[in-house]
Amino acid sequence: MQRRSSAWATLGSVLLVVAGGALLWLPFYTQYALDDWQTQLRATGVPARAVVEDQVTKSGGNRTSPSTTMFFRYEVAGRTYEQEVGCVEVCRSIGEEVPIWVNPADPGDFVTDFDQLSGHRGRIQGGLGVAGFVILVVAVPPLLSRIPLQRWFPPRKPRRRSIAPVRGGAGFTIRSKHKQGSRK
Image 1 (cartoon, rainbow, N blue to C red):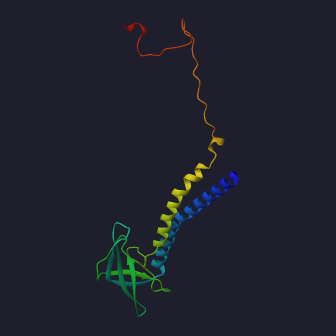
Image 2: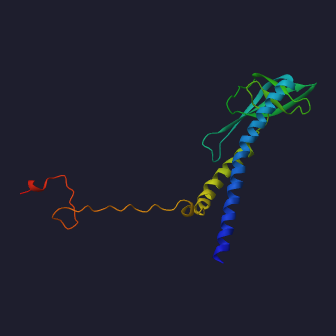
Image 3: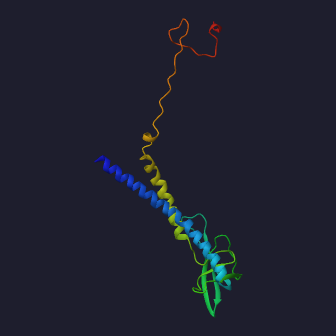
């Protein structure tokens, strides 16, 4: 019975490591896809000018710094749109004009001249990546403890020291930094 519960625990640890690794990989994959989408929007998007209408700063909750969101207003094909953009690296001031490239199929989707996509993309994936890291921190030690390393790497046997026979001694040697005759 002990053997079956050990197998289930090992299987559970393996599944947790796989799930944690997948969740940790997700933000990187998403970021690469968003980078490709930015490049495609710049090439095929409709150029427009957006005006920063407002900025809203919210306290961070459990984050140490507040988050700021810019609200852009722009016009495409005679219709006016308003979208938000998170201030990640760049935060423009109210009233400033920003060049953007709008997705012709979805005018609410655009990329700015400072490479920020509309909306708050990637937040959920970032949170899932943090969760994946935590799962890995919790699941990897139990999994490693179940690997039979003793079978593949047997412990080294301690080396025996040979005792050299000493003239006039009974197999006992004294190793000292001091000469024998120097003590009085």
